[in-house]
Image (spheres, rainbow, N blue to C red):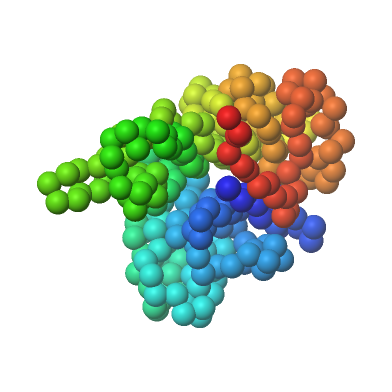
Length: 303
């Protein structure tokens, strides 16, 4: 199961009823954060989740509403007696930007690992999940992210028995481990069927519609996409500032054939996004306005 929480869905500036951009996902004891706008700590506490198990923080780009909450979060993680390494992923310049922000958080009891994205698309593997960064189209270098949890094929008991594989090795083989027993080597492919559908979440903000979004979001269980403006008449403004309207996001969701769409990164002037959803659902039926604290528990599909 993958737990996903849209911590903040605001763009540009925090409001009394809306925190700035941030997404948190949890999988088997690990937490992944995408963006860290002002108020992210408060949003995490309000949700009742923990700072300590955050293993990876990804940044779409370095505008203030996406990274200004980082120094305080790092200090809080340090005060929680964290000692293990924290991985940060973002566009080129990540280490320089973070170290500039750390003028107010100079001493941490844990090391930082910086991964600066060099190419239009890169994938990073972690224990049990993968993160793919893909370039989008904003007025500064900006990336969207896919978070994917793979699912191995079904364990075939009869194949294991017919090959004489000892029962004590069944569980580690099912987990994908290779086992050496003296001169004999047992590999997962000896007992597992074809890989099954896993879980996929795609996230993007601060961009015009691009082919890269459709390609990377394709088949996602959940697509969380910028909808800066709900009003149709603001499409020209979206073009000028390299953002998106609700309808443009819905068209991307339809083209990518995703299961569900959440809109996020609202303009401060957009007080009631739900007022525009009827038009959005004419394009993509399973669309929902994001809101702070909106959560999904994504499960594997039953075969």
